[in-house]
Amino acid sequence: MSPISEPSITENKKWYKQFWPWFLITIPVCSMILSFNMLRFAFDGQDAMVVDDYYKQGKAINISLEKVQKAKDLMIETLLTVDQQQVSLRFISGAPQSGAALRLAFYHVTQAPKDQVIDLFRDAQGVYRGIAEHDLTGKWQVALTPHDQTWKVQQTLSLPQTDSITFKP
Image 1 (cartoon, helix red, strand yellow):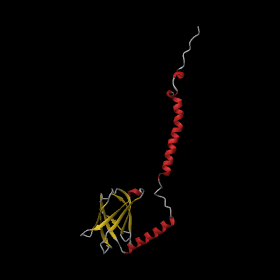
Image 2 (cartoon, one colour; image 1 turned 30 degrees about the horizontal axis):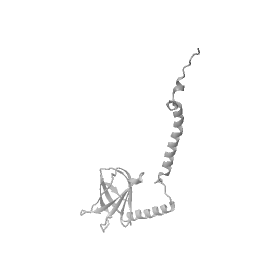
Image 3 (cartoon, one colour; image 1 turned 120 degrees about the vertical axis):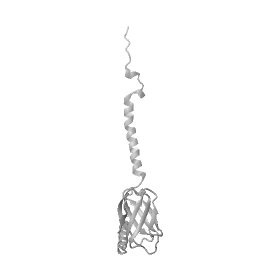
Image 4 (cartoon, helix red, strand yellow; image 1 turned 90 degrees about the vertical axis):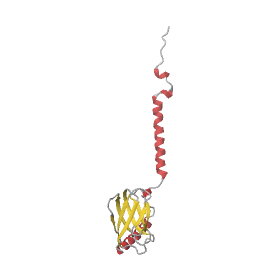
């Protein structure tokens, strides 16, 4: 009589119930998932901080500086008040005679999709008022121009602020 040997535990388990095949399959699957994600990030969109044509950008900066100098020559000085989404602007000096609408642009310093432009219209008291579409909390590069863009006043602001902001070139 021969002794019957009992089969070992690992011999009875099916392959998909064992640890090592799954461990060895997991490594290439994870690397494929990571590779596809990296490719998606690479081809998703362009970086908003990169400028294609530096020469054109430099010329635009020079024109912008001329507009700022024009605002200094006109001695434009305003008080800017931002209360949540309500924006009001009162001229201290250099108010335009025409009373035409002004454009107040808020450029977010790091997130271009948050940029917004507000048209300000003069009321009976001579105060220019407008309403922002989105919240203005954060750090902004703010530019004030008339619609014909003959002059420009710009400043970097952190909002919200409780007091009026002196806004001058």
